[in-house]
Length: 408
Image 1 (tube, rainbow, N blue to C red):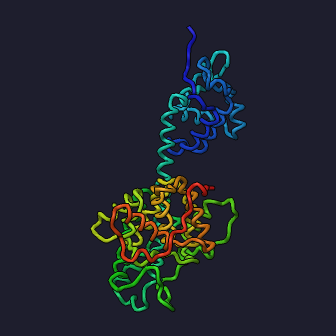
Image 2 (tube, rainbow, N blue to C red):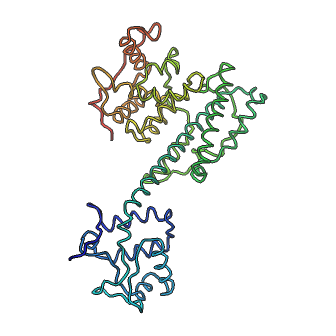
Image 3 (cartoon, rainbow, N blue to C red):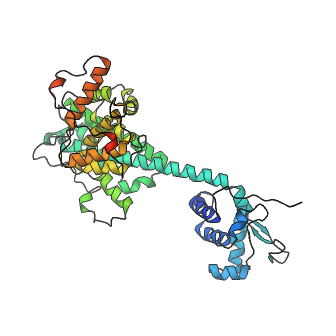
């Protein structure tokens, strides 16, 4: 009877196995030095042995030669092999004197790796999901960082005498640096996000009580604290290929938008909720459950959260933020999301449309106020009563049909 062995799933190769193990190595107790040994062993097996049910992937190489090529002593290599076997990654099947023979099938057997492949794939997928989630939390903190800076810039000089403002400023000064957020760990980062939301709400409350807006700095106002933690203007420009660094700089930028992008005065955050699309309303429902009126910050954060739902890359937000500010991009995204149920031109490519809107806004060719009012008019016609008074006197929307846009 011919013996059969486990094989890799269709489409998998030993190279893919090496990449997988390298990605999960720190989480299965595999230190870099021993990962190098394992990759050396895998790399010197026949590729066909990983996919043939009649052969096992086995490393037959002499230990002394392998030690030389790895820059180790034979004793160190034996220790590494024993550790790999203890981790359940290989099986040592050697002669009594330690010899390995291809004909006898004696060597370092790698079949255990195939047996645990699904386990390692699941671990890799979980780690990637966690990294995406932490990245999303970090980006949300960046939104709140910019919000706090806008609010502080809107404070009058006399506010420094207010104990509440003094405490808010002190708490904000103690926020961890952005480049330290990933080192906090998930639990501490989540706790910081909760505290940052409360601090944003406190300064919003103060501004509302004093009849001020977070988006309108007072003339000749000097900020209470000098920005030494997140000053992107002093960052040396890096090469275009350094995408992660560029994203950090854009995310933390607090530059004022070059073009104002306000909603019409009669379109409050509560009104915007009424005309928003289903996905944005779903995100805003969380804020509405907190027994307080919706605010501009709620619209911004809800719009940010629906980016993955609409399959829009965060880079599109940063591209628009440099021109329109967070609020402006959020309003554009509200239009895009609400346009998905347009009776004549339903949006089928949200990312492409958002990019086109941003391009038009940069060129001064997009009327966001008219677009919002046109959306409100469409919602009013659908349900049979107007959301807002005097809505007919607003300019018409300058809409971009979805089929004319492409997400690049």
